[in-house]
Image (cartoon, rainbow, N blue to C red):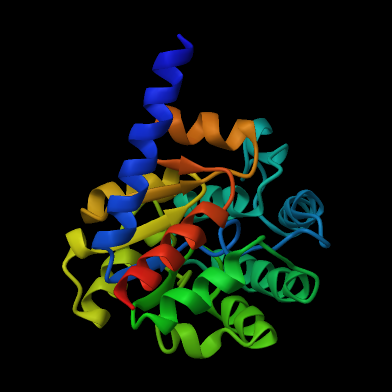
Length: 247
């Protein structure tokens, strides 16, 4: 069994090398791979406040019991969007979530090695894009605060009022591919959720899973992700090694 585990790790390391070698465009999910958006601003509290606001102002029975107990503000937004697509209620809820995300951006925690990896990829001439279910306003605020905006400009593709186009729909990935002129097979998506993996699969883009804990890794593996890292450090190490080889 130990030998099999060793072979699996070796095979996955080889796959990681291949993913990085082929990528000419790198599509980043935002909350997770780039930063912990709600590290200092509880997403659970935001979800609860969205629910309370809906119950005080929205139609009765708008959410199921399970949806009311959701700890994910995006899940609350999706649920309302499914029942009232394009409504003023959805527009107001999305605007409220954007406000909360903007507050969260001020205390977001950078993902270890993400800044260095982003800069290293950009320095190699690779094109970078953010493809996220968060508001693009929030992404730009965070990137500006870290001095990373030039690495991505103008390629930030985030949430729109059309909630049906949130991942796992590949809409934001396809926008990034079209804007950069990249063939799907020459791109790489870095994401931390099953919906990221599914969006990449639908867009035909190779996928690298980032899992900061065992629960995240389990969810990604169960969704079909074959290459998952618990840290971005080995990705940065491989990229640095390739740069030295090129020199």
